[in-house]
Image (cartoon, rainbow, N blue to C red):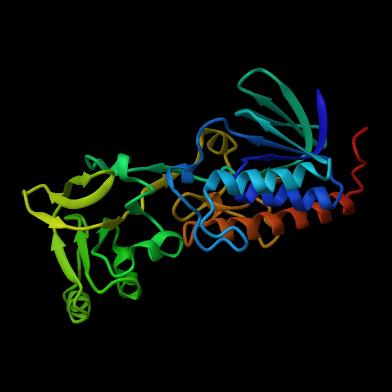
Length: 304
């Protein structure tokens, strides 16, 4: 069984950023990168990523991984962790393939699992003309017809911001969401159209959205639709029984520590707000720095 100072579970931006910082701090680290496609795999590019603007998600990960490998302190392993159990002053991690590893600390950077609404045609357009972040992908659709899927009340609070990218904006309000009359007046005063009804399907041509189809048969021409899927934690995080905050995100303190001793978390699994690669990288860097403080203060010897 191989020993490490830090085991990072999740090979996305947060996990890779943490591995780079830990490598530069000479901490023996292993990153377990799930063999499943990452959440942003369908996106053609990562917009607004400094130094690699408009690179594909795969290119971003490959670039950071190469930088990590250059230091020689971190290993990136394609494997799914099935369990992580306390063992002495650290943990034993087991992969689905039966391999076992030990680490003094764990950093969770697993992201979230998206649960998409049952809308026909959504999955094949996800990441291209059905998006969830105007900052990452909105520029490519500037001044074109936008739709916003309002299936949670809090989405209404940010309706004005999308006029920054387009003045042709339609809010598709799910019947389960109540729009206060005063709020409806504010939105309509900005020439934002409100359409009430359940979205039944999305029609497309050559891989691009063309129409949003409502359950009552109404069709609205749109070229991009913003959708925020419901999210849940992956099975491993659920099994750890960590304290969660509102929305089901892992609760962390200012040092990125979870409610269980020795387990840290960073990235999307801790935060349901503005989820993007830049935020995840910042959180991964900070979590890694706190891990170094922790390991040095407890005088954990470097594994032989």
